[in-house]
Image 1 (tube, rainbow, N blue to C red):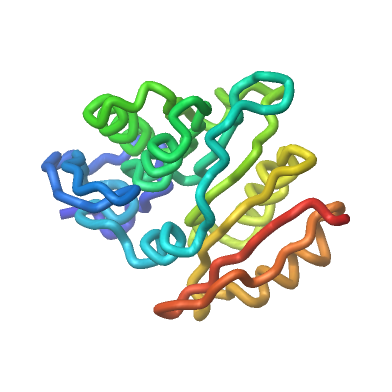
Image 2 (cartoon, rainbow, N blue to C red; image 1 turned 90 degrees about the vertical axis):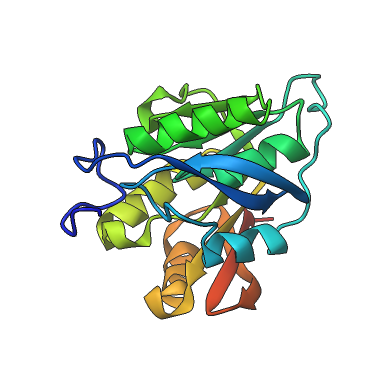
Length: 211
């Protein structure tokens, strides 16, 4: 059992990994993935991520106009369901899966290898090259890290959207989805945030470059 004082956003979980496999459905396919304790939603595909993946439009799998690979980002990857879905939808792209939890990164790498997805880069936030901009960001962000840290995280990554890129975030309504959307519209210059969908107590927020 996880230490109740230990959070999924701990860099090095002290609890035993307790690794096991579970069967889930990702990108329309039934797959087997590896999970462990000490990470976010260690035993299942959590409801918020399910809502996110049902709500987002499909990714553009084609190269950029200059011929380079599109770059996509999953912020707070956990064991990898969002990143694995992105990588399956856009196999010629590069999908960055970032997390501060080293166990989550290891699981995402292992699951990408298990599913034959060589386009996933599971790394710590500081390992993403500074010159990478993102055509799309999907995230079930770590709301419980605290408001200041969450705002800093969103400011960092949403500020790296490509000119025609967009982001989709899922946030639980009773954990402040509506107030977060207001903050984003007030505090992130050049970006516009709107509500794309609501389901099961969650909001899916859509972020675009302001026209």
